[in-house]
Image 1 (cartoon, helix red, strand yellow):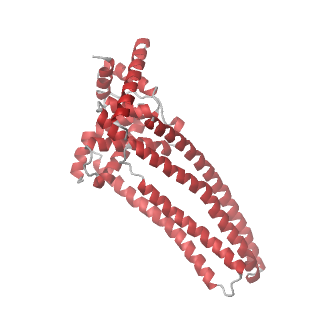
Image 2 (cartoon, rainbow over the protein chains, first blue to last red):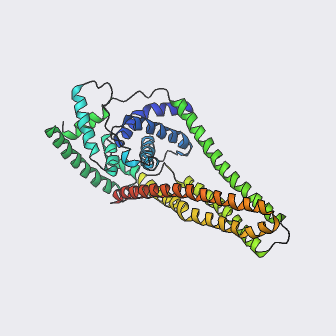
Image 3 (tube, rainbow over the protein chains, first blue to last red):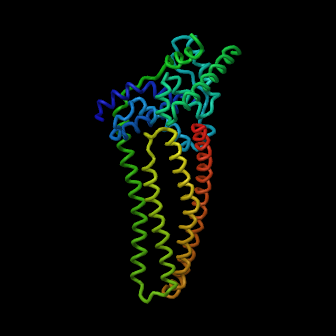
Length: 163
Length: 197
């Protein structure tokens, strides 16, 4: 991968990788930024081995999810690695801000595997793509996605209703 | 719009900091990491290799080798040899960990790697250190015969101090490392089981 191709990949996938990391770290922008850098370092390191057997976004999502999972080891004080949700800067609208806050409150209630899955669902990926990223069968993925969507839906409604 | 579509829309519309022009920095960091990793690995192997070389040279330079001497020096050489072997094995296992794998499989590989690290930090460290100290202790009668009394006492005292310090620091580090590895393995295994369920 030449540097200019990498640059275009970086700019194209930066927002999705950032969102994935931000969600995984429950809204901690500092940890997410560090992790995004780690993900793209790995993308650069591994670019030679990408043979196009899957889509580029599947490949990048795999690396991003795996980097987040590897982080469990790096952060030895792992109970404290998830800090408090930091509000995104320059929220354009109060309504959007509230929706996002509810969303992050939902995400915070999920355990690690479901949080990983939620990040992929929220990126609107197909079950097939999610299965390819996580290495699950499509049937298993469909069941997991369905269960999680129901769970998120219920949590979202409860939080929205109770404020 | 149902709640779920609202969630996805809210998720995708959240403000994201600018990607900036970090590409050059990332490429430089990636290159530096590869170089640093190689240097670190080479340095460890070099230090252990030099120690092994000195021990072999010492073994060859002694005339009229007693069986006690041969046992002692062999144990020390074996300890360093095992340590080099473990270092090499660990680097081979690390290379097998491929971040591009499907996450479910990657998790299993990661758990396996940490289990190996746990064995290295636990069993291997104790065995290697024990062999080295035992080998050194077996050489002491030879040192007593061939060295002056003052120098022999110096070797005993400095040896005890060094080994005591090593036991304290290595023990502390190993205990901490084993605790962290156990927690990590437990957490990753839980995630892995959840993916498989």
